[in-house]
Length: 140
Image 1: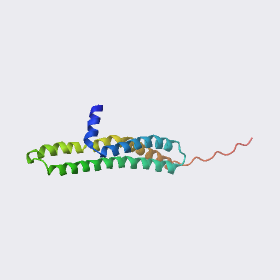
Image 2 (image 1 turned 45 degrees about the vertical axis):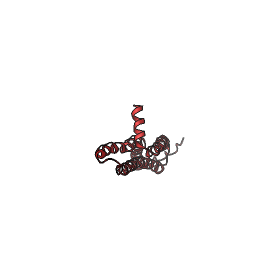
Image 3 (image 1 turned 180 degrees about the horizontal axis):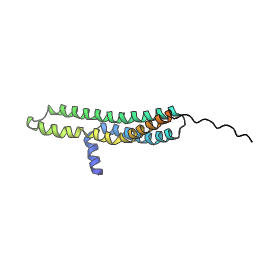
Image 4 (image 1 turned 90 degrees about the vertical axis):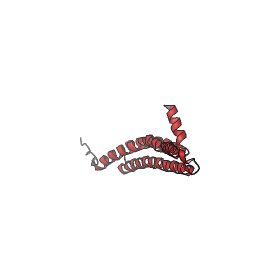
């Protein structure tokens, strides 16, 4: 399994490093913001943190698609210098390699995106819930 991940990382090229950094940030943000949103009493702040997690997950996914576009552009630039008989094979292999950033992005966006969506739901429920009223003082 590690060999296939290493090969996937090699096929993806330079965008994979940026995705890996964003994925590490996403994992740290998932743990930190998840605990923050669960423990923080201010409802709107916790909801804002959850929306931030969703945005980070979507950013990781968008960078994966940008990496795919970069890979396809590199492949098309290389096709101009290739034997015309080999164009079909190079297009097939090149488009498969260009999908590597999307595959990694789909793996890395899941923790912040899923946690953020769950916390948005929790925050929405907290906003809808009435605030607890203080109990009246007991008279002896």
